Length: 202
Ligand SMILES: N[C@@H](CCC(=O)N[C@@H](CS)C(=O)NCC(=O)O)C(=O)O
Image (cartoon, rainbow, N blue to C red; front, side, top):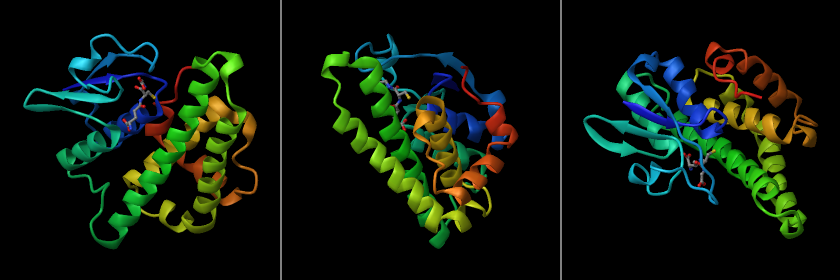
């Protein structure tokens, strides 16, 4: 299988963490493919018409995207149980959506400052995205620590990759403030081999 990837993409990182955790790294070759909405990655549209990474090309089926579909596929392929069934499974998927939502908001903030000419940048839009991240972190801190501290699942991986990306691009905003339990959980999760092996280049 071939993974179209970027080493700084938090969505790709989820996939890489799952490849590490489920011992499937050797089954995937990596093709570095970076693009933005202003400069779409050349060649990627034939694999993913949305021209986004990650995309997973398989020899025996269609190319998969987006990260949630790929994570689910890899979990099923390894029978790893990262998407549990029953009540915990719905929690896992909601947690994964929360992590991805944090990443979506943080990426929009990054695009606003990096892609839009300074005179056209809109502070209220950036603040609105940051408010989503603050709300999500407060909810994770107040209600999700018990789930986050349970057996490894795809929800935890999505949240960890999201918080890592917020640190990577928006560290100065200080998501840890008032969220001690979440900060402690993340500090411990970030020490997993799968996380240390996938730290984005500075
Ligand atoms: N929902 C998608 C988001 C993927 C995504 O936005 N990837 C970014 C890199 S971090 C990208 O490829 N952006 C290029 C673009 O938007 O044109 C997923 O979970 O895979």
